Amino acid sequence: MSRRRTLSPKKKLALLVGAAAVAGGGAFVMATTSNAAPVQNASNSTVCQGLATALGNNQTFIDGQRANPDAQSQARIANRDAVIAQIKVQQAASNCKVGESAQGPQAAQPAKPAKPAPAQQQTTAPAQQTTPPAQGAGGGAATGRQVCAGSTVTLSGEGGAPAASSNQFPAGTKLKVTNLDNNKSTTVQVTSVSGSCALLNNAAFEQVREPGKFLIRRALIEKVG
Image (tube, rainbow, N blue to C red; front, side):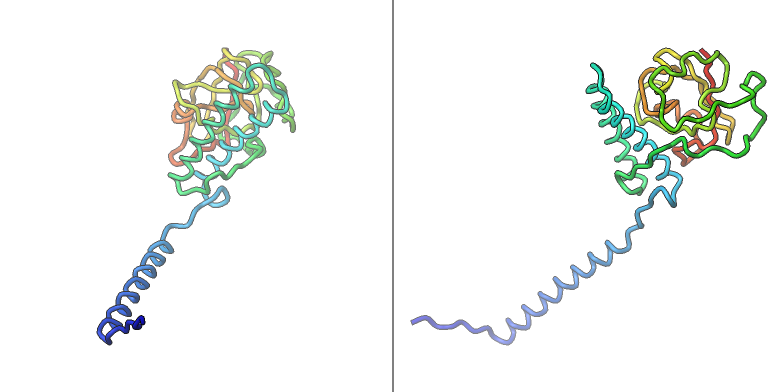
């Protein structure tokens, strides 16, 4: 015949104290977690906005490659997927919403330039297209002329030596990109295809960026070779 085991008052008290300690520890963990800095997004952080735009550019490019594939599309898509993964790492490190994407990076057009346009600039800026032209569509622009008027510029997320990618100019084209907010310029060669007029890789973007910003809202893009 089994006998029910009863706990002494001292053991009951010890168990209650232990349970309270565990509950208190959980409360401490919850309190510590609640004190973490709130995640930012493109609407309240210029850093997050630039990263979201960079991610959106790559996603747009991937969508275009899937819609109109060619022999190199799979390789390009794989490369851009890797770039997107790296941008997400940067978003996490910058306390931005990971995976946030901002499409249409060329929508913002500066109302007034910071300085007079160069003498060789076209007197009438070409109308901005709502649908990106096919690759190489701008390859016939005269050397030294402004191209892609009104475009903003961000980074592609790619590594390597300073370079650019474009949906308008073929590989080998040289573009000069000037940040009108700090007058810094870089001249780079187009080495790959992207989803907008000019995307700078990480090294090139570092040469013209403002500290803490991943988006150049007022840019002058010129074809120089």
